Each structure stands twice: as C-alpha cells, then as structure tokens.
Figure: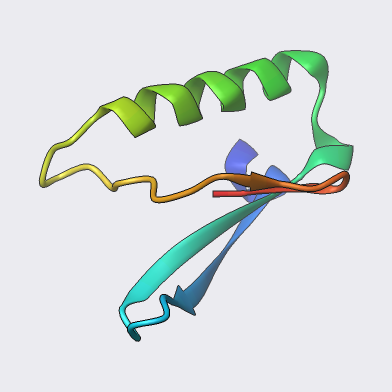
Length: 68
C-alpha cells in the first residue's frame, strides 16, 4: 500500500467538536512524480461534491509535511 508508506491518517476534531480525519503526508518520502500525483489528487477531490466521496476542508503545508 503506497499511501500507507507515505502518509498517516489521524482523527481530529473541529472547533465545534465534529470529528474529522487528517491525512498527513511526509514530504521527505515523496519523489517528484509522487508529489505531482498527490497535488493532482488534492485538486480533483476539492472539486468533487458527492455523498460517497470525502470532502477536503483544508490543505496545509509546512516544510516537512502536507496536512489534508
């Protein structure tokens, strides 16, 4: 599982207490091709709105990780 090698998923809560999942990708493990793939995936998911597909509320990035 490639995603399991690159990322971890954590449970978090919004300020109102609603549960969310946060996917954290370690940028040190990304190749240029994988970086492009992940950024494309984020772009596509942000445009989708369907009850059977997760919504992306925010994407934050620091020098070491991408948080989705």
